[in-house]
Length: 266
Image (cartoon, rainbow, N blue to C red; front, side, top):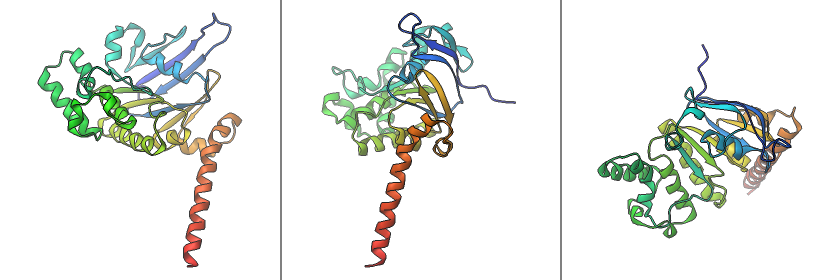
């Protein structure tokens, strides 16, 4: 018997101009528990709108979203959002709070006792590979990568089962982006999250996601594993998106091959 999806998005649509055009149009997407799914596509494809349907930052005009079998429209909004981790590009750490206070904000709102919050903050600093001394620092005393690690820690502080990520690493330099992405993927696996990530970084989606969903003009074009999408050229739009990382991989293989050839002739 098939396992029910953890996140089930059914026939959702959204228009911001009274139905003249749709930013999301009749999309269906089911996401298994503990899966890591990346949403990719050009700007304006509807990725972020679809993501925000899940925690009701945007309400769909039609269709439904359920999490663990519960229709999100019937879950009290604060309860819904406190049960979902949310990581976004601009991080959004409260500047007047210390890093530790930022990380502990959701457990505090949920009524956790202070000693439990302190222990959780210390645990999370280790998990996201930040020194314990950073708990007392202000966000502006951290680098961009460190702030994003703190943002991840804050998002998972209350042990959510579902984490939404909206261009989470887009503002980081490539080396930091790779390091923070790898750290989050390890946490996803170790802590058993279900993750939905919007990204323009197709290469990172290929490297860290289990599945990729490709969107264009508000519609879902394809959804499969990175390997399958890289080898499938039936849809020209999907093939075009996959062409760049394939070309980069071929160029790197050529460079490595040339390097090996040079060494054998020395």
